[in-house]
Image (cartoon, rainbow, N blue to C red; front, side, top):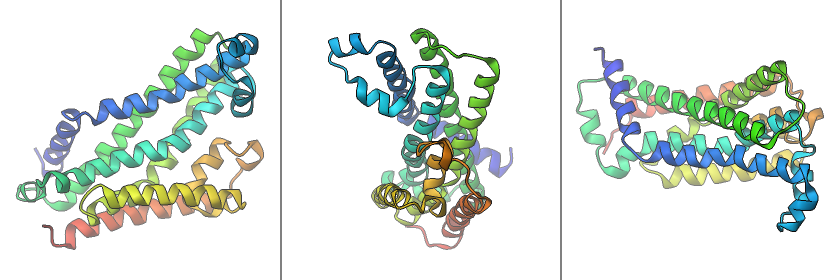
Length: 261
């Protein structure tokens, strides 16, 4: 077993034995469930009002009660909610050794620091991919239970591709939070950075400059600001890739060069 394989196995076991996979799965499952509730309200607004549900809010959020609108809502949830959930995953994977005070034991293993960081990133990416697949699968079940019209195999495949692309853009953008968890030696600094980024992404997107702020790109790509804002330029995607590369490089450099406690 190579050093990277051993590190990957160790990181995967630590994640599997924690409560975080269940908590993140539960949190991310709210997206298709709430989307299904909006669709149900739109299908029968009279009954929704009878049960105290607000159909106007569902109309603003989802638009129409059909499969295209539901898939679009899922993509937007992955873009916005995924930034929070995926960032928390990266923060936990890279920060829990500092909080648990086991980082010295980790670095004492006969495995290079670069292999450890690489294994952590693979676990984070795989974890996020599983959550994205969960949202899509649960969305199919919820949509079928609600009885949404407009289903087609081509739509399902195309929507799956959009979900994968949206999740991929979001995952790339969480790498700086891995560096923040490492440099901050715990959870609080990167969590503060997440809230700052969320605030800035909302403000900058509202000003019309979201295409130039990397953390606004996944939401714009998902169509959260309307279909007309979905066509982003190549520069926006290059900015996302550059942000991801800087986050990975910064994390690798920190673990390789910094004196650990």
